[in-house]
Length: 116
Length: 153
Length: 159
Image 1: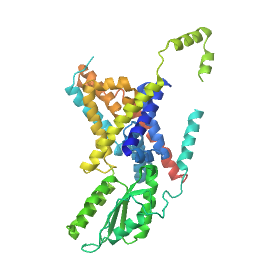
Image 2: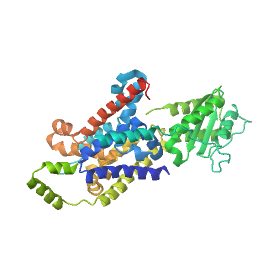
Image 3: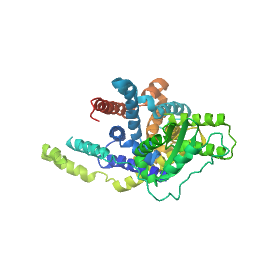
Image 4: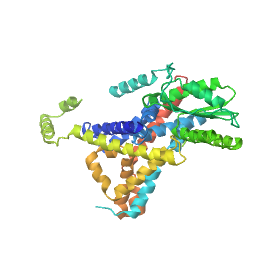
């Protein structure tokens, strides 16, 4: 069942991105930035975690979950170490996306040939 | 600018609604419940508390599966919640955890909704049923599962 | 709000704007949304498969399976980007391929591959995070602001 909702919620978040593309005429950079900020805001309000519980990968695969993880990490560290944790804790919970992208970017540059 | 503030205000209101208990115990026994009772004879450590926990939790129709194992000091329960209720998963987990802790004040109670813990407990229950575990190895296994449930990335 | 902008322009510019809007390529919004929904949903579905696979066959819990799932998805993205397949998916699906984390990976990896001709340090190293940069910068900054507000509110007993 969670597979169905992963598909639907993931698709829905992408539709929101598409609306930002087509109706609001934004470019990919702006759209993704807005979505990440939206993920962070939703987690601040406490609405993103229930979405992850309900839709699984439908909420963790879109870029919005990056904003969610950053806020999560910051809040966890702030609970332990006070206000300074807000700055130090952000990347404690999430680094998989950025690390993997960089590592596989370099590997890709080594293996593959540029097209243009 | 005003539109954004209005939207954020709306989201704040949405997030604050609903502090009622997330589960209602129904009198009807849950038909499709996935749990196994472990008989108390032939066990090095009686699984009576685990069986009690399962009986108490099976009154909730939102729960689809319960796996529980106890040692002399620790009780670990894994619960699976039906899909439509998963939006309230955190609230359900808190409520059930509180209930189980009140029900078993002299045991360390861990209640989780994680699928992996449910899988591990099911394997452990199978081994306990066939009676092929020594007390020490069972306690080691339970400790491993409890540590697994506490992992955070 | 668009009307206010129009009123500030002299009449020739207003005419040109009307002319331009008439000639602009009309985007089939509904069809694009459907394509984005299908492809984006499918990528998330694959993510759920990978996540479930890691939970069942490895020692990951639902909580900890997120990281290897992301890493696996980006690995797959590297292959798709390297063989030029991801760009074709992107042309079809628009946001459906840009919004999932695979889109982020594709932005980084395709930049890395393209700038290889300028050398690894200056080419690959400097340009890799060009498209991904704003996401990281404003993600971190907005998370900082939100976590700060929330922590202060908790400290002052408001929440």
